[in-house]
Image (cartoon, rainbow, N blue to C red; front, side, top):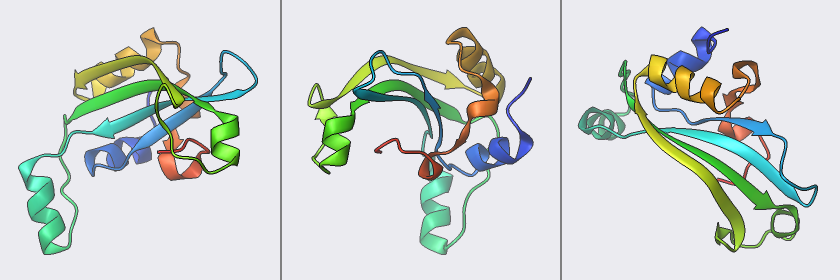
Length: 121
């Protein structure tokens, strides 16, 4: 299975993606977040009111867990204060991203837009 084309296009435009996954305990929410590295072209596009479509971007990938208590109380979340980073990686290109997610055991069909999840980013 591959990352759906619509989500690949979103990544090329710099839109963050995420997948909610099982946490290590029920008091936590877990997720993998994928952020696109910003390029000079992205800043130019933003200033001119459009989005840059960049194939083979560099991606920052984070596997984090969050305290449900912090989320429910709308408290600020920071490393070791309601948020624990379990893994992180930087990969170049969509194929390398897919490979990393497969290595981490993240089902590609669980990927969606970050804003559609409960992950507090």
